[in-house]
Length: 176
Ligand SMILES: [Zn+2]
Image 1 (tube, protein in one colour):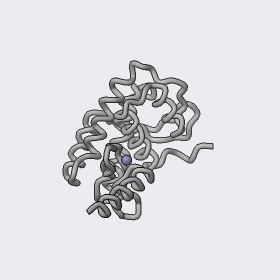
Image 2 (cartoon, rainbow, N blue to C red; image 1 turned 90 degrees about the vertical axis):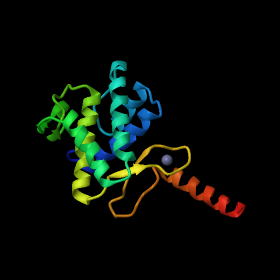
Image 3 (spheres, helix red, strand yellow; image 1 turned 30 degrees about the horizontal axis):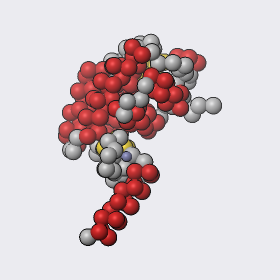
């Protein structure tokens, strides 16, 4: 059974993962698999959906990459203005009632991602008063990460990147 509704934290994590995957060159089948992991009822993502998804991933990347709260707010407000319509409740595909800000249940995947992600990231800013995350600090990685709820800066997209950065820093210190 799926969790009740789609908590903002899950929408934000889905946005960060899809942004990282799309910018790393994931194909339509891989994106469909990621969507299923996040509970979407989808067998395939049409190839024609990919250009808009990639464009939206670049917009989301910009919102994660900014270095101030004001700049992050400007990016997210821009996305909301471009992509989000009036909120409405939907129970498409037998799901529990949940909020959508895209224009229709059959809106393009790119519009769906942009509207749901901008909404979730904006809700986190409103709740925490700080940017929702950033871009991974590990060498050769530019996947977005989300700040943890506890207030500490996260800095890495994954345990793997955090570990290899720690090891690299240790080697660097030893070399000095
Ligand atoms: Zn990383």
